[in-house]
Image 1 (cartoon, rainbow, N blue to C red):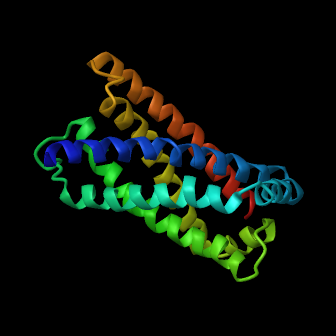
Image 2 (image 1 turned 45 degrees about the vertical axis):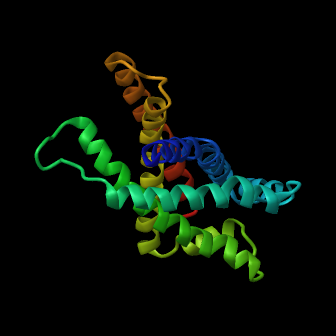
Length: 202
């Protein structure tokens, strides 16, 4: 019974990591990419999101609660797992370790980013281009955001491979190899979008 419960939780964990969390990450990076077109374009994108119907319900139901479960169970997996990287240097062993390390980094980054934006908005601040430019006027925050973005993008990209395996979509070595290539393409593409958007505020 315990093994079945663990198996179900693991599948739910990978599912939520892609739907809706992964989709939200892609959407968020794409919206931020509007900053490359200038402050007005970014502020227009933010306003469109802010005026979306049932925004609070969507944020909690499709973003915060799924992230909370994914983070808590992910931390459990990170500290329960026993990677054997010291004995074996296989590619997937390295990905296993990096997935857990980037998960922890991403959690810290997301929590801080929410504090700097959504929580400050609740206190009366306005989320706009100037807010992000002010945040990224600090060189330390540029490094912090760059590491956070790359960690989040890697965690999502490699998570695609994990999702495909755990849901029985890629079974054989050949299909898993193609999944690895696809996940790396996603990593490169989203990294470009994320970092390009970030530097638009600098």
